[in-house]
Structure formats: C-alpha cells, structure tokens
Amino acid sequence: SQELEQSPQSLIVQEGKNLTINCTSSKTLYGLYWYKQKYGEGLIFLMMLQKGGEEKSHEKITAKLDEKKQQSSLHITASQPSHAGIYLCGADIVWGFDKGAGNMLTFGGGTRLMVKP
Amino acid sequence: DAGITQSPRYKITETGRQVTLMCHQTWSHSYMFWYRQDLGHGLRLIYYSAAADITDKGEVPDGYVVSRSKTENFPLTLESATRSQTSVYFCASSSGQGGPDTQYFGPGTRLTVL
Image (cartoon, rainbow over all chains, first blue to last red; front, side, top):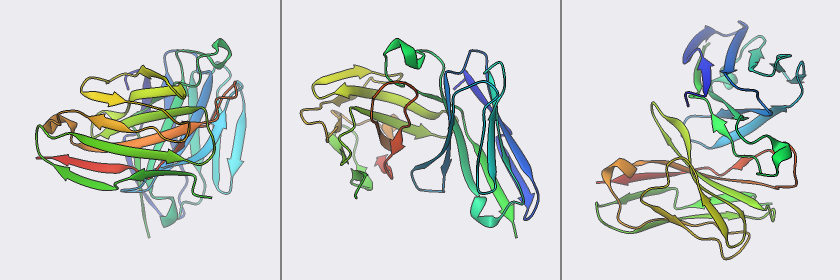
C-alpha cells in the first residue's frame, strides 16, 4: 500500500546481528499491528501498538510507535534463523477505532528477512 | 481450539469456472475479512463483514462475491475466474468489540487460474 511504506523491502543478516524494520505512514496511525508470515503460511500476530511513544517487547522482538504516531519500528536483537520470514505492518489509518467502523487495516508491502546461520 | 481455518488450501481451476473459498472461525468473532496477497501489491482487502448478513466492499472487490449467513462462516466466490485472480487468499477475523482490535488470519488458500 502506498499509504503505508515499509523499509527495507528485504534484508539479509548474519545470525546474531541486530536489525530494524520501519513502517511509515503519512497519516496518523490509530492502531499499528505487526505480523510475521513464514513462507507459504498465514500471518501470525506479533504485537499491537496504540499510543504514541508506546513500546512493547516479546522475546527478542521490540516494537515502538513514535510520539507523532506516524512511524513504527520493529527491532530484533541477536537474530536467529527462526526469525526469518516476511514482516508486515498493518494500520488503521483511515477510520480511527473510535469512529465505530471496526478495524479496517491497510498493510505495508512487507519486509522479507533472511538470517544466515 | 481450531481458530480460523480455510479450505481448500490449494486450488487449480480454469478461466471461467466458479470457485468458492471457504473460511470458518470458532471464536464467534463479529468481523471477518478476505484479503488477497500478490507480489508487488502486498495484502489487499477484498470484502469484509461486520456481522452475519452485513458485508461491504474493500479495496479490490470486482469479480468476487461474498455471503455471511452464519457468524462463523464467510465464503468467497469467484463467479467466473480469471487469470488475474491467481493469488494467495487469506481470511481473517476480529472480535469487533471496539477499540483497536487484532485481526487473526487463516493459513491461506493458494489459487491458480489457468
């Protein structure tokens, strides 16, 4: 989606290295979701961020939503081969959850991560 | 707990044929969604449903029909399949209880139209 840009589009890192994936919007992000997709499989929910400045962590993955709520980053510490896959950000950038329209999400194009052993 | 399932997982059909992709969720979620995933386009919303008998178009609805007679099922029908509909289709659901609401995805159906 042009409304939600992810960078980089692909990334190859050596096992043990840290990495960051960015998700940028030109509009306010009312809710920002990070998903991981293993090749040929469905999307697995990782984390949801709502408030500006919010940061959440799960195991070695940390996601942040900046204060202006227009960019989110996903940081992986000490990457492992199990981290390989496609990371997608999805955001409610049109409706706003408080407008009663459900959570229509727009997705970024995805970041394809490969971790070399 | 089965969660959200899709069938078939793989389907090959010919141009002009009618195809129905099935989606079933066991959470009694109000909202259900159909997306297609294509290289260069990412995930795009086809149709969504806020409740049984309530459906609405998403970003790319042309050539698709949906119905939702029961809360747990949300079938997607391609009435006359075209090669441009070759894609991976994902169904998702969310509780719809208000506020930011996580969507949970099925495993996908890989459809090839020859």
